[in-house]
Amino acid sequence: MRGPAAKIFRQLASLKIAIPLLVLLTGVTIIGSLLPTPELFRTKWYLGLLGVLGLSLLLITIQHAPLILKRKGRNAMIGVITTHLGILVVIAGVIYGGYTGFRHHVKLIEGEATIIPGLPFVIQLDELTIEEYRQEEFPRMNLAALPKKQQDSRLTLLKNGKEWAAMVVAPGRPAKVGGITILPAISDIGWVSELIVTDALGREKTVPVRPWAPPLITVGGRQVIAHGRGEADAHEIEILERDGEQMASLGVVAGGRPLVIGEVSVALGTVRRYTGAKVYNRPQEPILVWGSVLMFAGLVWHFYFRHRDRRREGKSDA
Image 1 (spheres, rainbow, N blue to C red):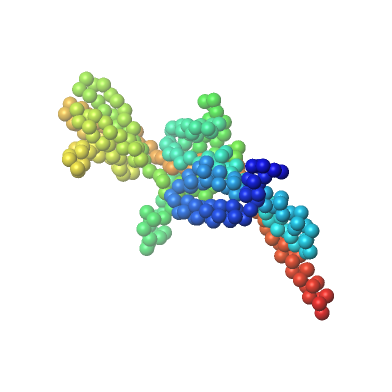
Image 2 (cartoon, helix red, strand yellow):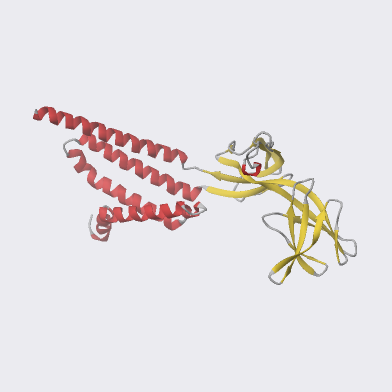
C-alpha cells in the first residue's frame, strides 16, 4: 500500500492516535454521565469519535497480529487479540444503538391515546390504579417520600385504530413489545383536568390544564394562567394573572363552584390521572453482551496461558 492511503493507514494503526482518542473519549464519557440526560451519547460527533477509535484499534490489531502470533508464548497473546475483538464488538454495539435506538419520556393520561413518532403502535392508558401506604404502616416516615404501594397502569396498544395488545405495567415491571420497552415512572404521577370557559353568549370552550404545561388563556379580555392542584375529590384550579413581576390570584375554580371573571364563567371539567413513562428500545444489548463475553474470555485466556508459560519457564530454569 502506497501514497496517501498508506499514510492514513499508518497513522490510524498507531498508538499515537489511539491513546489520545481513548483519553478524550474517557473524559467526554465521564462528563456526559454527569448530565441529566444521556443525549450526548447519541450525537454524531461522539459516535464518530467512537468509530475512529474502533477503526484505529482494528488496524492496530491487523498490523500486529502476525507478529504477535510468531512470538514466544503466542497462546497467551491470542487472548490479547480476542480482547481487542471484544472491545471492537462493544464499540460497534454502542454506535449501532446510538443510531437506531431511541428513548422517549411521555405523559400517559387516563382515557387518552398517546402517539409517539416512530412507534408502530399507539399507547392508550385505560386506567391508573394507585394505592397509598397507610401512616400506621410507617408511623415515623413521611409517606410522600415513599413509592406507592401499588401503581398499576392498564394499557391498550392500538394499531390502525384497533386493539392490538393489552397489558398491565408498573414501576419495576415494564412491558416489552417487539423490542420496545414501556416503563412507568415511580413518582411522576398526578392529576390533569379541564376548564370549561363559557362566554357571555353561552358558547363553551374546553381548555386542558396540565401540570407540565399550564395553559395561558384569555378570559374576559385578560390573559391568565390556570394551575391545577389537589386530588380528584378536592381538585381545584387557581386562576392567576400577571401583576408586574408577581402573579396575582383571581380566584379558585372547584367542583360545583365556578369562577366568574367579567362576563365569562370558568368551571371545572373532567379530572383524570396521569403517569409519566419511558418508552425506549436497546437494539445493541445482544451485541454488547457478546462483546463483553469476548473481552472476558480473552482476558482469562491471556492470564491463564501467561501464568502457565511462566511456571514452565521456572521449572526449566530449575
